[in-house]
Amino acid sequence: MALRSNKKDPAMKDIEFEIQNNEFVKLLLESIGDGIFVLDTHGRIIAWNPAMEKITGYSSEEIKGQSCKILNFNQCFDKDCPTGMKDCGILTYGKVEPTECLLSHKEGHALSVTKNARVIKNRQNKIIGIVEAVTDLTELKNARLKMEEATRRLGELNRLGGIIAKSQVMQNVFTFIKASAASDATILIQGESGTGKELVAGAIHSIGERRDKPLIIINCSALSESLLESELFGHVKGAFTGAIQDRIGRFEQADGGTIFLDEIGEITPYIQVKLLRVLQQKEIERVGESRKRKIDIRIITATNKDLKSQVDAGKFREDLYYRLKVFPIYLPPLRNRKEDIPLLVNHFIKVNNERITLKVKGIEKPALKAFMDYSWPGNIRELANAIEHAFVLCSNRRIDLTDLPLEIRDPVVISGPVEKEITTPMIKNLRQSHSLTKKKLIDLLQDNSWNKAEVARRVGLSRASIWKYMKKWNIPLQP
Image (spheres, rainbow, N blue to C red):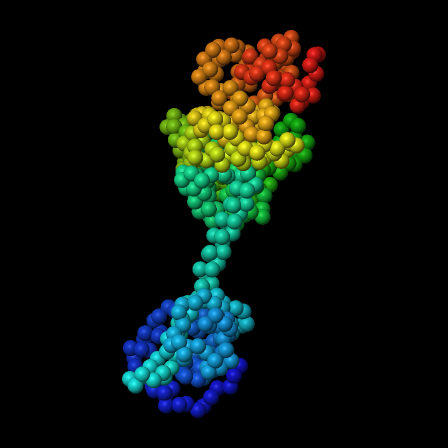
């Protein structure tokens, strides 16, 4: 630290006198939120407002008389702070435009600030000092870094095949995801089956503060009431037949992290009451135990049902409904965001190319037009299956119209005569899933005495397509 100088030139005395004896100037310096300090022409500090004390850690008493070099600004006229005023550009240029830079805090660490400066002239137009203003950017920079980190993480999810979209409705969803990731509010994701509700839940968790903790996923419609209760809350030994040891539940597994409850509209009134208690008290009881256990979790739920209608019908608790939809996110169906279809098609082509030797380079215009014209009742899941279907049939390097499932390339046909031929439950399920599995194909071949032409007619594919499927899955031509 430089020694204070006791020698003051007349100009310095004039400025100090004005600052110390002009009540308006003193009040102005004290009330300004930004840091303000004044230098003489030798670069010595002669005035230092309270905001500068807060920003730098230096009190007014200890900083006065020191050289401005003590602050060690790293950007003054595109270079580091010079060793003396004769090398400083302020006396030559008369000002420093607002510049983002670093200064050294009293405790030794660097602070991000914006600074600007102007020379002070007397009536004879002679420079008698410099006034500098400093704005602390620490909080702003931290907020910016958090937003950039959230955006980066969201971008990584997109590149990994999570959420892919450019439509305005989905950009709005992205905004909601970023906003919700910054809080612990309970989220209700609503949308049709296949719209990507689980992906949204994963995105929220992955860019939020709980990202280093578990994300536990459970489908509420897949289990009976008793099994779901045990799965969520855990149980103790002897709680019921088969409970041979204590078991931790999914709520406890998610402690510190996030639990995603899919198909929340399927839970019974009994489970609704227990879930409401979790939301209100942040604690659970294992099945067969009266001990309360505190949990720290974020709850995200999803449904393809209209929960409000279920509330009105008395099938879902109103108090639970409003607890769950603190922050609602609605996912639009694919038919309402068709501008995203080319992006999704390219993405699923890339995904399938990573799994096979023969690479598909793209899609022909007629096939893409069929995708754009189709209503996509199965949403993104159906689109993914359609691309996989096309990969099986594609004999060229680009997907053509004939490679697509029949219901996409000719929706009128599939809703007409073909549908009348679909009589067995297995065939109906095949049409609804828009995909053919090895087991389904074998069952069809057995039901039709291994007549490939009949199987092809029943599923709306060509005989050559059936042959290709059989070759892919190593199914013999005859039993």
